[in-house]
Image 1 (cartoon, helix red, strand yellow):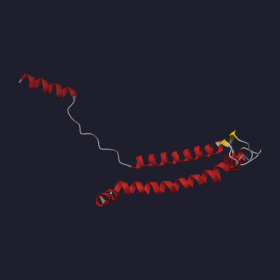
Image 2 (image 1 turned 30 degrees about the horizontal axis):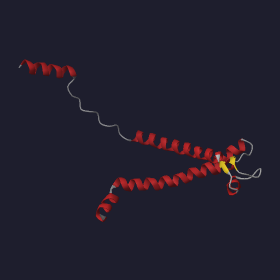
Image 3 (image 1 turned 135 degrees about the vertical axis):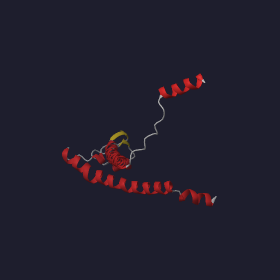
Image 4 (image 1 turned 90 degrees about the vertical axis):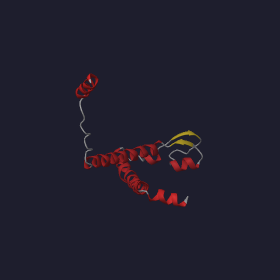
Length: 135
């Protein structure tokens, strides 16, 4: 069983997947930082100082006016943290766009698949069948 596990791990595609996951996690942190530290503050500036990370709607419970999201959760209130959701959607859109660009560029760099070998046309096949039936 141990030798089978070693053979499984030694496969190239498993190692490639592991490297991809590690790089993807690191890239995800970069995109999160870009969103949290650059994009959302710029959006907040444009919208007059709105901080989306603390935007929420209280469903149940008592929350003091102007309390942060963390304070509302600590008070035991049931909240919908829609500001965090907006930030997560922006993160996703950035990641999806970058992956799209990478795949598009990779497709341009890869050679086109070889053309299928040309075979006889339908007319030629029917003519062969006709000739075989005549014999």
